[in-house]
Amino acid sequence: MSTTATGHLLFIWTPTGYRLQEREGPPPAVGEKLDLGEFGRQEVQKVGASPLPGDGRPCAFLTAGP
Image (cartoon, rainbow, N blue to C red):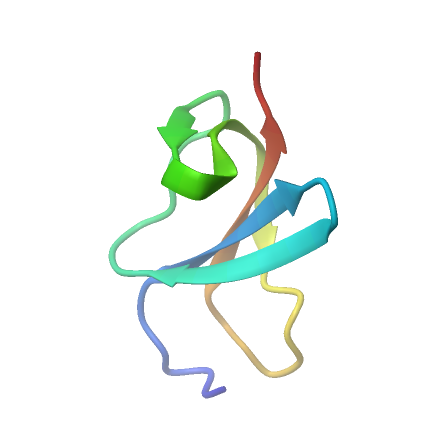
């Protein structure tokens, strides 16, 4: 991936492991709750650097909510 990429990533918790999802625009804020359809409702725990080498996009790290 290019360091000039736009948008952000979501680091999504699932019962079988984590998944990455690409999205356009700025990342959601810490504490924001997202409805991710098949992945359920999840909350942003932190926003940090992408876990992918050389990827300059921000990444929102999520956990499953109640």
